[in-house]
Image (cartoon, rainbow, N blue to C red; front, side):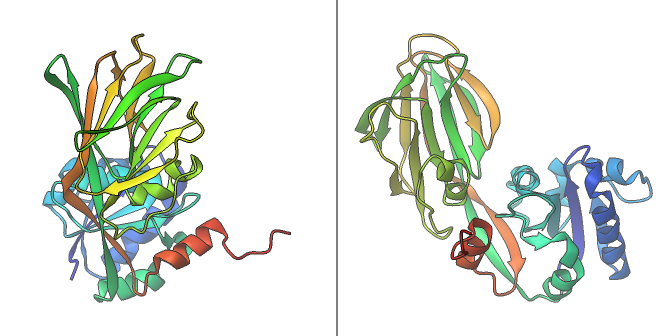
Length: 290
């Protein structure tokens, strides 16, 4: 069970060196075949460990561990999505919705997980294709969200939204978030969207500061195809981002097709993982306000 383990870290994250060193020693003591990515090698300053690029990690291990925060988990998940290698997160970030093992309890949790007692959580991805003048000019995917947002302007941007070929609305706003259930606790939550349970086969559309205040978030079937048509007439006033990374300047007339991807991310959690307990902890539900 999990004999070949890969470690992935954020480039230049020297603050995780002690945790990373502890994890390397822990896995070596338990006779696991250890592989690290180039960022780990740089942080550790070691050349005696098998090192490969993170994008190739999925071909060489049966478990990957991301050391950092949720951002590191997202980047690791993107690199592993084609091979669908299980992914575990050691949390040194702020929230830890995805990376849920505390850095001060690594051995406590990994002892149990490496003995085969854990929960596996399958999370969907979404993908976007951008069509311009009848040609596909860009493709990207996201675990949290794909966003159309205003750029280089103080004005609202305009776009039309269709779902499965049916017009939903013509919108003027700062943008639109199309989120997975995983992404419902990210930017979509800050913009007023609902929290979706990770097992739901659904997508979430959340407008960002809409001009029409009756324009509310909606939840659609996970098999739906969402089409966004850019109506704004000025170039580079709208931009596409995926999981926080800027992807493309959008031009008037661009069409974005967004749907669920046929690949998934497999997250490994400690045994008896509970999504609602995670929400209570991270969002401070039930605590006294003062």
